[in-house]
Image 1 (cartoon, one colour):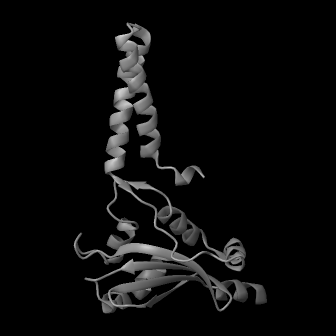
Image 2 (cartoon, one colour; image 1 turned 45 degrees about the vertical axis):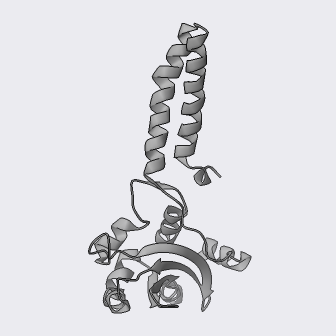
Image 3 (tube, helix red, strand yellow; image 1 turned 180 degrees about the vertical axis):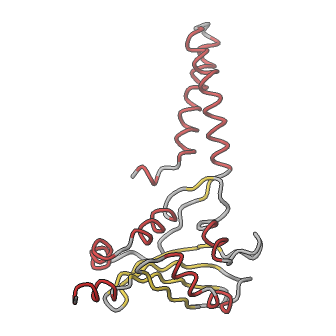
Length: 190
């Protein structure tokens, strides 16, 4: 639940309350409360404003996750899939887009104007395997560029992850990170 509350809102609220208390105390000649309000309230309020300006909203789910897929996530999701899901569904600060560093490392972000933007995500089952689908708006990054980076994407999000790239609509790219069950099956058969 705390992940869904933006830190900027918390700081704005606390800073605002302390600042108001400081002003009220100033006019009532209460020096101690006045100092608390001015020395703590104003900086906290300014910090909240700064975070609000640098805040990146969580990426929304494009469709609800079914209970079957949630159970599959608990059983099969890799640490990387879980980390990506948690990172993009929480408030971020100081970034322009979600997965900014990952896109740069993969060579999918030559500059700020051409960078794909994560617009949604969903979880589903693909042939009995857990799948995290990242939905990008990619008007300036052609599908061919994504496909050229396919092997690099699998290495980056691996191990035990297969990547599938699709274009459901014009200027849209879906990157499916599918749990690779073959290593587990190979280890069990030995």
